[in-house]
Image (cartoon, rainbow, N blue to C red; front, top):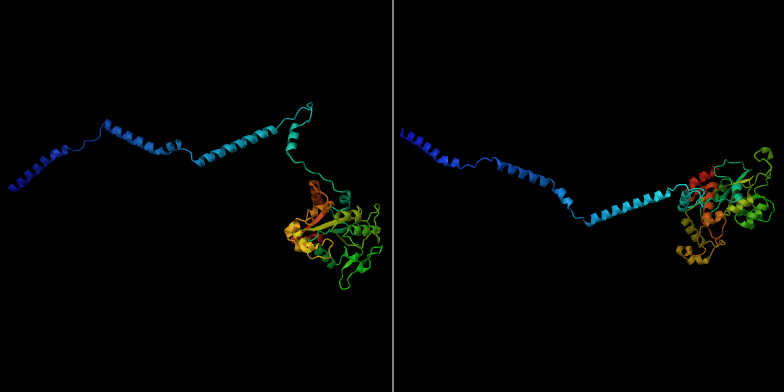
Amino acid sequence: MSARRGNIDGSASTQSRLGPLSACRQPKFTGRKGMTIVVTLVTFVVLVSFHGFFTNLVKVPTPDDRFHNRRLLSMKMDLDALESAEQHRQLPVSDSSIPGSTNMKADLVAENESPVLIVQLPSFIEDNVADVDSPLMPPQMETPLFWHVPKAGGTAIQHLYWCMGLTLANEVGANPKFKRHDKHAIEAFQPWKKLPNRVVNVDTTTKKGLMRAASMHLLGTHDENIDYTNVENFSKDTVPETELVLSGELQLSVDLLYSPQHKARVFGLFRHPVHRAASMFYYLQKATWEPTYNPAYKKMTLAQYAMTTGGENNYVVRKLVDKTYRDTICDEDLEKAKRIVKEKIIVGIMDEFEEAVHRFNAV
């Protein structure tokens, strides 16, 4: 009993000792102090959230930023200038009573635009050459003319049509060794006994030869009052022996050999001008039989040849418009040459030889 009582007394004693400690506990937040702490926390959160905004607001621009800004400003100035220029171009039509042009806007536009060259072709080109898109005519009304550009596959075309059995007018038939160069009438013959090739006794590759061929009526005689589409009007003179003319002298051959009653159906093989010029140089280094052969070329490089007077200088344009190397060519010549090619020549490309032949055979 005494021990139990002691425990009870001890328990009471412990409570009495804990009493002062419980009195020392931290009091609860109440009233004005609690509100102050809440406001402080909210302010801190707001400041952290908007830190990026305030930083960018007072950011010092870097060199890249300054460059970007200058670029934007320059672009804006260019746009403003363009808009201003466009406003000036939109001028009202002036009063006809004001001296000078009756349309100031048209004059202003004309000053700022390059004039379009309108070129006229020689009448014999217009009249004696069939347009590329015109229908094919019978042989008594047209004969094909191959315009031979040197080192552009022309020799291959010549041998091809020989193999196909056509009678050609080139330079072979007028070679003195065949003993027909001095005859006064057109004659077709086989120059080599072992080959089926047939030619006529003229030279269509030189000016002198073309004049002789014209005087001999290479392509027959034609009366402008006769309708040669009518078979009843056929005669030996109207159907030529020649089935294909080959010449590098386009304008002269068209002018001398053809007529509005018997037109030329022109086709030609073209090659990249630099490649063609290089091929010509290497050819002339060894072609002792050519009139343009020069032994000095053997010791030259291609670059040196290009700088000589014998080098290429707009060869195709000059031949198309019939100008020599002594003549000056201009923009009008270029436009005229382009129009001839576009309207009057069936074009083949040497690098696409097979396709070119298929195109030529269609006509």
